[in-house]
Image (cartoon, rainbow, N blue to C red; front, side, top):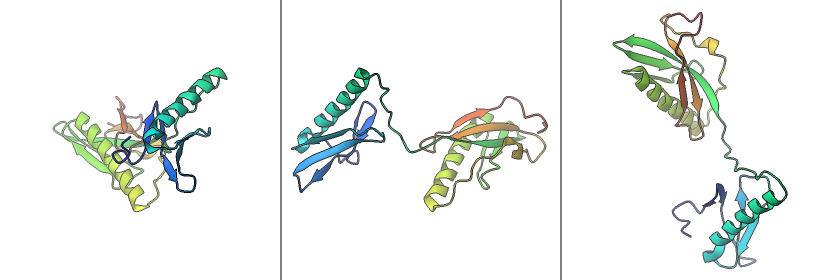
Length: 181
């Protein structure tokens, strides 16, 4: 077990644990993180703690199968959010994009595909910056706020994913009715 490389976390079959040491009891111990079920493990030696964790996970999965219970999946603590981006043609096939719900979050690309990729990065970095600064993350609002400023444009849907840098971009093939083109 080399916990120095992964922050002291153990991973196995989609489950995570962070072993600790009890001076009082002279044992290494831990529990599966991110699930409500209480699954603990322990060992007298550091070299065996990973093996004990694996056995605890295997026992948990076996128990769930025996009692016809769906094993809980690790909860990441993150959630997906969708923001709307407004794409506007700026000439020569290039586009700009802005997010009405996130003032100051804009991007540009030489093609629609480049703009979509750049918009993903801009959205992820903008939300990350708000989070790091301790600023509230604005809730996404209805797409009706996303009106292209120059009378034309394509409305896209952007999803903020778990690591806030791999958004799910889906540009709508047609402008939203009433948004103009």
